[in-house]
Image (tube, rainbow, N blue to C red; front, side, top):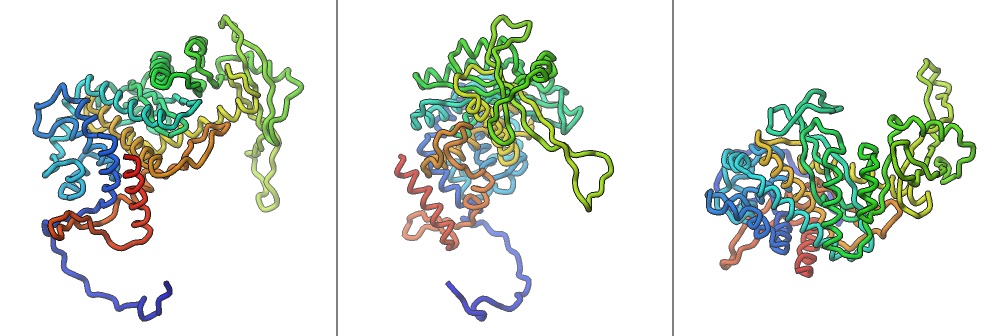
Length: 458
């Protein structure tokens, strides 16, 4: 609607007085969407089951503390002390079913008292939520990615160690191994480890457990695995083959000098596109007992000279190649093998979102199980953000060679800015509770769309 200049412009206003009063206000009206999602998934009941062996020990039950941590991360907050900034928010209290939110010290003590059984149960419930979504999709193939990510801390937390850390050298850290589902962009499970272990530490057993659980819940589904060169070993290859999983695995050049000779002696490369070419061979390292399918890939790149140059005239370059080798048991054409393996880069996007918006890189307490609980709360917050979008929107993509996620997901930070962080007032006209928000057609349309979708899916 077009407005006149007189309708748009106004005079500068005098500074106003500030007054703080107890009111039924909220800064997070968008939590009404997650209220419906939590109810549909019966999330509070699920969390209660994870901690029922500790029932009755505290005024604030453990499952409520974990639910508060999930909400804390959905709101975009990081440290435990940040809970002080929304202690009186009415929408948060209604979502948690509490009249008063716990103090920071209470949350910290609850994490410090966490035990191994609670962690195991919480991991199981997270896996179950992901499996329920996969069952609903009815996919014939499920693509599983495995990789580790560093959690650094300045404190001396239990279970941390000094290990390889490119960004914070010498810092103590954890090095958890994650299992993610490519089609839904969700984190299926995590294997927690200290920061001084190799990527492959405990990897084989963790991978097989994840595959077995997915196959038990979804019999007949074809499983595909993508992993990087840190997991390269005959033991891993044999285990994945025995588990009847298709896999692609990056091969480390530094450990296999014979690969250099194979590449140098090769005269004919088959073109994949304008930049990529390949050849493949049935080959094995000397220590291996069986031959496997190895796909050798070279990519044409422009290598810039480092010597002083005249930038005002031209930027010189020479044509060169970068090389990559993949071992696989897939029987499709090399073109599809390469595209499939390159798709594992999407997992880095999941890690980036976990660290940026779910604060996976934050280590809140000094105890091992408390830090694992916080990490799992971040995983739940991420998975719930994806679950909400999968309920509200139909898949925008089909199954591609790269196994891109079926939805074009918005990051949790985007949902926070667009919908969650909206001011509102809780009113009771004629005794009926109403959440009143400022008029905004875009926000109204999106909020009602999510609420309608949740109601239809119930």
